[in-house]
Length: 367
Image 1 (cartoon, rainbow, N blue to C red):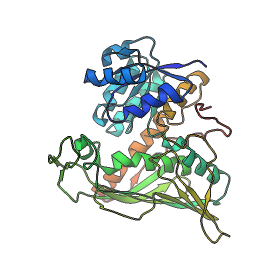
Image 2 (image 1 turned 180 degrees about the vertical axis):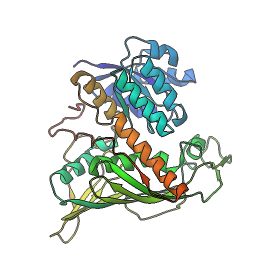
Image 3 (image 1 turned 90 degrees about the vertical axis):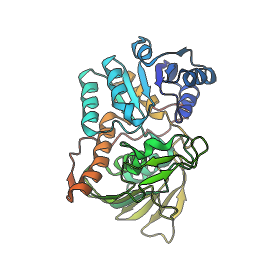
Image 4 (image 1 turned 60 degrees about the vertical axis):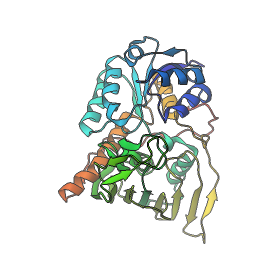
């Protein structure tokens, strides 16, 4: 199989699973080079995963063999590196969010379109076995017409485990911008684009204390809302209730539930690729766990990159595409705009539901 050559920019906390899967799991990808501001991190990753080239970011973008740049830097660097990569003639896949601000995201989407390049963005968890099984159940009418949904991610932040959690409380962070992409991308995949948002926000703690080992005891000034709640109106008519919070010590709330005219579907955690899928039909008396109908139930981060690589050859639109990521970015901002203004925030449903994965796939193959 023809392998698409990839350069990874950013060798931090999330990069290991990308290196693992893009070098070993997916049959159409090859990691040719990597870079990081701390060269030792890039060198260590190269040695661990058999990557032949350790380059500066400028050298990586100029390398004529590299077709896709995978941008795994922190959110504040997403826009600039993606823009530079597109200007260098590279296809791009970036960790979420696409950019910090909607106007930056729109610029990247338009630049990719003008230059005939593909732009993709995490999360790609909606391509995992759990959410793809849910997508098929909805598309095949198992719960009838979707009428509503709920989506909840509540915890007490990441300072207890992340080695450098400061950016979670800076612009581009907070629960909506950190975890919202998983939930919103899943909902758009299952229910279609969003047409309006009503949101409310608050910041319950002005300061956080790091309790993870590397920076134990250091204080973080909180610059973003840490509890976001509201309602989504989907273009197809469904409504969803959503809470994203770093202010909750514990909870028994579900992750995502979809309510239809003929039944209810309990969706697995959208930050994972597998997990239980539970269905209760209108004629049933209890929820039943259904078998997963697709591969990729383990940690398959990078499947969006493999899909983008496949689309370079086929001419199809990547499933985890820039338009989808831009729509999610605008939804996240809409919660805050609505909260600040006291009015509904209208959205232009400028993306399509991403194509589902085909039946009959085997591990390592996307199409």
